Length: 180
Ligand code: S3P
Image 1 (cartoon, helix red, strand yellow):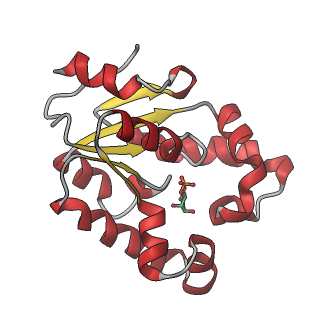
Image 2 (tube, rainbow, N blue to C red; image 1 turned 180 degrees about the vertical axis):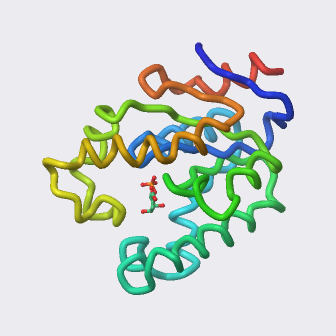
């Protein structure tokens, strides 16, 4: 399995899953956490439960800046936890020095997908994703390409990069064994 491991990784205890919307962070995160007996957290869900509003409503009623503040705050609240997989939001690594914070506090794994794959995954779910909600479907691929290019410098700092096309239920188990 192709992956890149950088020095300073602290496997296997604190795993941050990064990647664009639709890359499968929550899907694989739940499966991998269960397989490795780790707790699973989803940063967006944590924010929604704690702030008692959906992400879409937070963006609409409070604005993106407020959402990014909440994202920063609840990300850092996980510091006291151990043995977890956290599925971040697609923008989490790209704001508020969050990427450096995650690198310093655990193992960052980037689920890397092509714009075409991402388009397929998000096409029917734009309503609940405020960043792409108002993009004309005919321009969505172009938008994803641009946003991905903008975010790649953050994602690519991850300790491990996994191509989503090759992911399976044992990807994390295999990765942990390789690194051990
Ligand atoms: C965002 C991605 C979303 C969510 C919010 C902003 C982004 O998470 O955090 O809508 O900026 O890419 P998912 O990647 O889980 O859809």
